[in-house]
Image 1 (cartoon, helix red, strand yellow):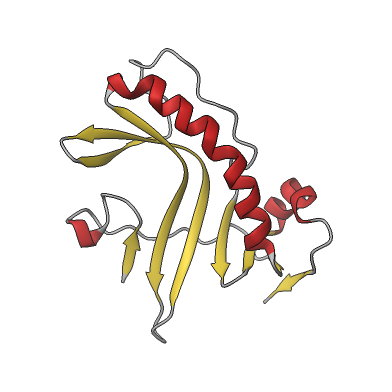
Image 2: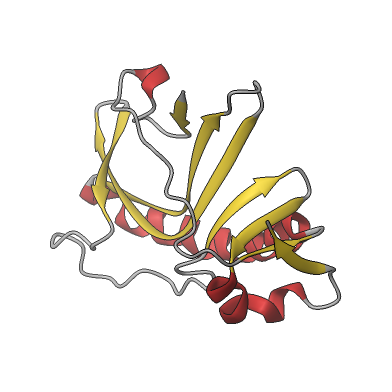
Length: 150
């Protein structure tokens, strides 16, 4: 069973959403990588909060990360996180996914996102990612133990 962490989740009556596995056969596990990403995500949040305040009258909302939860056969839950710019439209008290392209009614450009395009799987304090993503973002994981994930 897959659950999304937003208003579109099956628990809230939305469509089921399947996570996308990283695209290649090469994956890396970064031990303790969750903490490094949390620190970086904290730096990203403030500009997104300010931006959302500025565009609030448009009825749209911008999220810097999208999370999908998938229950595994053994009962554990696997968390997939996708970093980027995800647009949502307010419909009453619900948020409806509006896509990754900035809506035309919004004139102001969104803030930069240093983790744009990163996709990870969270395993406790560790993260699993595609080798190509690791190459692009490895400076954020300096000093952490890394190995090929099988």
